[in-house]
Length: 158
Length: 424
Image (tube, rainbow over all chains, first blue to last red):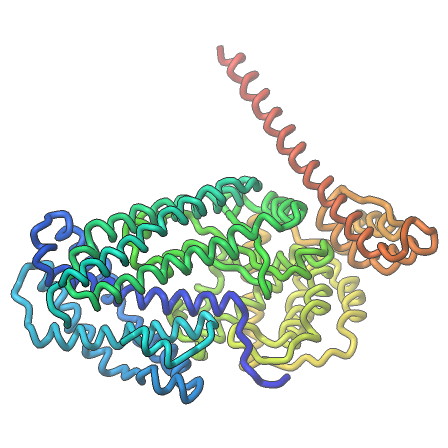
């Protein structure tokens, strides 16, 4: 035996699905925040209902609180793949994530209650979520096995 | 964040939204294509589910395109949401095209074998499944997979969440092509019935969480135990043919350590030490097995599961299988000898599919040599002809099973009518 860790197709599919799922969760939270901030959205009752639906779904997921371990595993695994990926995937700080989740939950609860949002907390949360979403997008591309081209990917993301 | 949208931004936003809406046509096309596949009812249920998911996604996409994305004021945010949403749809389309639609190319008799296995399970254990080609053998929980890749689609997830588990068998062409390899599917069925019904592993490893990372010892231990248990279930269903095919198909190919699978050495060792004593005709099994195992090295994998853990796992699994009246394959039964006698003369045998597959594997060399010596056909086609013979026999077993079901149904109907008439 060579000692190389082998992954079979099902494991790869499940790991990829987990990454896509987390990217989707973050996207859902950002979608809810963006719609809440939108003047146009507030005018339509239907959109407010949808915002609450997305928030309820995201809160249920966040309250399970099991994502930190997987995020740490998956981001480090792909970040440390080669020097190129180290440049484009930021390291994951578990303590940052664990301290940010309650902030995000609080923002989402404030939106549902219609309370005034803390502007700075919102900016920090958005910045954090956007970085995480970008990292998971890169990880997803690497998992999908596509050609990794840091240059063109950066262009696409700028 | 960018400012409010300009005229150019509006145009760009409209372009993105119209690109998203274009997915609906593709999704409807996929749904129709999936619905056009004709398979036995347990697989037809999976196809219905996938087609339904595609149509629900159309509702989600329309809602996102009509009520959500147009209300996002920043172009950058809109582009980011579009990318995540369209990427998820792309993954779904890829999954349907490369896995679900590939179920069309699977030999009918492979489905018939799985139907035969299902027919022996208690009613509440009968699972829904689909088979497709892949690079390695495995089983994927379809509902769970779709729930994850479709995170952004709330209408869809809400509707598809409460369905009974559906499974996708993924198998390499080398296995799907040859009926002699099909006993390996019993290992995958072992995983399915553990997750759906047995739940021996979750009781034995209560601290394990589905979300443990692949590198955690708890996860490796749980996964390894699951593989050893599925091997035992495979051997319970198919006896020696399972063990022999597992060794032939995989043992020599093993060049790496896996986080999810113990080494083949460990697996064979556990089957011999713990599996065999729990199967009928142990001595005969052991004698036959010795030929297959020979001088194989039985090294452990990344970690070794303790003897007592394996003992509890196997005995508990066997207990539930016995209680559920699933008979183990008995290589000491008279029927097996009869089947071997026929097959070694290249003659059909179709009384019992498990006896058939075991006999087919055990007598393959003799049957091939009989075919050549007696000039039964083109020598170059001897292996292919043997595969056809076994597939045809399997088909006959399947027809007999359906006839038996039909006969039993008629009998039950007649009894019901008679009792109603008596009551009247």
